[in-house]
Amino acid sequence: MNYVVTPPDTPALLIRDSDLLFPVHRIYCVGRNYAAHAIEMGYDPDQEPPFFFQKNADTLVLDGRFPYPPMSSDVHHEIELVVALASGGRDIGVEEALDHVYGYAVGLDMTRRDLQMEAKQLGRPWEVGKAFEAAAPCSELVPASATGHPSRGAIRLTVNDEIRQDGDLRQMIWKVPEMIAHLSQLFTLVPGDLIFSGTPSGVGPVVRGDRLNGHVEGIGDLTVVVT
Ligand code: MN
Image (cartoon, rainbow, N blue to C red; front, side, top):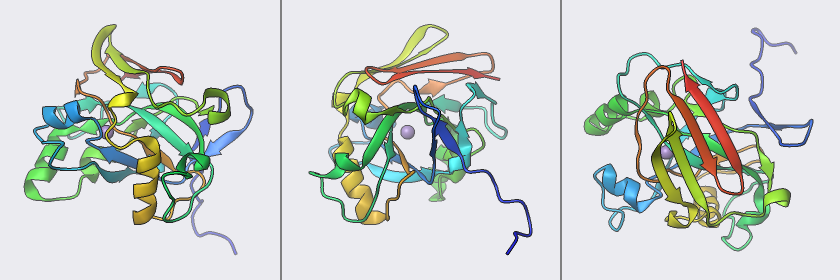
C-alpha cells in the first residue's frame, strides 16, 4: 500500500563520533524539576512534585538556528539535560532505569512564556507555549558508554556571553532514574524517546540576534542563534 501523501521524515539526532543517527519518537519534558526554578515561576516545590508534558519530535532544531516564533513577545530559554532512550517498556523500576538510556545531549526547552501563562490561567493545554515550530534545539548525542550517567556537574546557559542560568545536575528533584520510572507508569516508553529533564533557575526572554551557549558538564555544548 502507498500513502496518499508523502510521509514525513523521521526526526533524528546526530551522535558524536558516529555516522549513525538516533531516530526520535516522542519528546517528554519534565516541568519544575529544579526547586529554584519552581520558586521563580511562583510555585512551592515542597507542595507540588515535578510533572510531564510533551513537545513534538519535529520541533527539534539541529542546525543551531532558532527562528523567533510568531504570536509571542516573551520567548524564554530553558537549558536542559536531554536523556535518550535505547529501550523502553512500562513500569520500569528505578534500579534498572539507567539500563534503558542510550545517551545524553544538551537541549533548550524554548517556551512562548506569554502563551503558556495565558494557558495556565485559563486552564488550557500548554502546546501553544511549548510545542511550536523549532521549540526544541538540541545538540548531538553522546552515548552513555562514553560519558557514564551524569548525576552532578554544571548546567549553564549564557546569552551573548552573559551568564543567565547556572545550576548543577545535583539540584534535580527527580533524578534521571526516577523520571524514567515515573514516565513509564504513565506511558509506554520506546527506543527513540527523549526526555528533557527540566531547567535550573534563571529563565528569561530572548530577542532576535541573541547567541545562546548551553553547556552541561561532561556532556557537551549547544550554540543557538535567534533569527
Ligand atoms: Mn523545561
